[in-house]
Length: 331
Image (cartoon, rainbow, N blue to C red; front, side, top):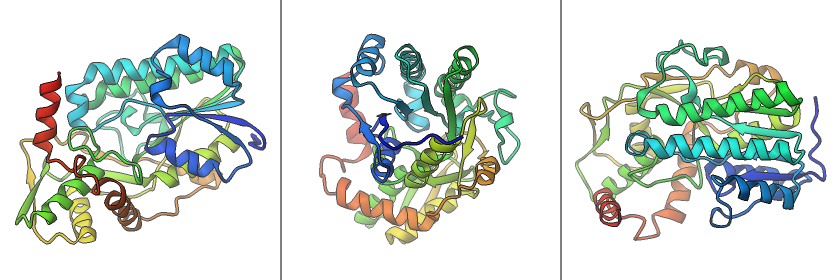
């Protein structure tokens, strides 16, 4: 199939997030109209608000990149939000899209949906074949529900809705908060601060042994636009780089790029999460897409963005314990 974006009104839900902002950059090269609204003006957890927005703006197609996201600590301390928010976001947008006659929609999933001990690399057929990783179970269940909604509206109403699962993403616009960020941006901030403090060593969570695959957000956005224009199937499809590495090796690569020469110390008292998570992206490769940004280049670009946009803000660079105290004090 070919979905022509020319002249189409495309709503990118979650346009200020890591993937959403990358999608806006990528879609700027297409002859289409990008619809977006600030989070403060549209609560995606409110069905009536979502329905009114779609009715008033009349998008021809929707990409759902909005989600409540975070790393292991955030998932463990806020499981209710990660489950409820993401269930509501998926259900509200998908049902309102159908109700308002939107026939093309892409739901952005996550590799967290796969079983904790899935065979590696993880193929799309592994979905629902085993227990999930407990540390992000709520988020995973909500994302699985989104896949099932996409499939249900295709089956019952013939809607051309699809879903895609990217691997771990990073890039400009990432979240570097030490409480809620994912592993790669968290390591960039931690190692950067260790360098500034001339610390002889810096700790990282867990044993350092788990293996993770990483994909730059701009590569992910390019893959999503490729799929949006060419893919139509009830089957979700993986988006990955095809390479993984141990977290301890990732930390050392980041340290090399930042120029930190201290020791990297593991902390086995902290959880590791899933032992390994490498996606089988052969179906996407067979369609003709492959990534362009290698990990070292991507980390260097992300660190430059961090220095230019995040580290320049003294408030943003407060130590992790200060942020945690403020969160507790304002609760």
